[in-house]
Amino acid sequence: MAFDIAQIMEAIPHRYPFLLVDKIVDVEKGESAVGIKNVTINEPFFPGHFPQKPVMPGVLILEAMAQTAGVLAIDFLGEDAKGKVVYFMGIDGAKFRQPVVPGDQLHLKVTKTRGGGAVWKFDAVATVDGAVVAQAKLTAMLAAE
Image (cartoon, rainbow, N blue to C red; front, top):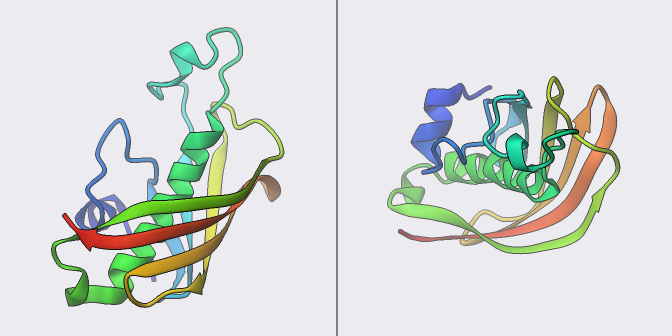
């Protein structure tokens, strides 16, 4: 199972310039998924982070992980998710291992450790070419818009 950009936009409210997932693959319904973000020089944050050596901000890598997790949760809940959005509640143990730069393709693996209702927890790992670039434990809550 996979999600294209239209299906992602159906599941979560994020839009340019803050929609940070291009597609989602390897979905195990309600359990895990891999988001894909193609990082290009045209990203709106690169002119300021940093002009001479563009690096994707770590907080945006975390956000891309969270968006992947949000789609996984919304899809699993189906009709029970109507009228709800996913909000961050916590980020634990975030570590950044190496910079993400234009031309990289981020693979954002999220695995549910708790969830099925209003509160969900995920282990998240971001890789580029198989090398870990970031990881964290994410907690999210589904709430009415």
